[in-house]
Image (cartoon, rainbow, N blue to C red; front, top):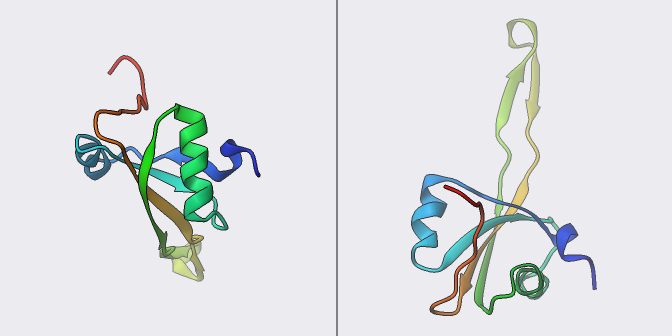
Length: 98
C-alpha cells in the first residue's frame, strides 16, 4: 500500500466544503489514480477516524488564454476530488486556531 500522504494531496477549504463539514463530510484533493478504498484507508490512518462513505469525481481543467494578445491557448490539468463522509460524532481538525 502507498503512503497516505501520496494519496491525499490536500484538503479543499472552500465555502461549500466548510458547509459540508458541519454535516460530517470533508473534501480533499487526491491523487488521480487513487481509488475509493485507498482514499478511505488513507484518511483513517492520517486522522484516526472511521470513514463510512467516499464519493469521488474528476474535475476538468479550464481553458486558458496566455501570452501577448492571447496568442497562446492552453488548459489547466484535470484533477480528482474526494468527498469523505465520517461516522456520526467524529470530526477532523483541518486547521487550528480559527
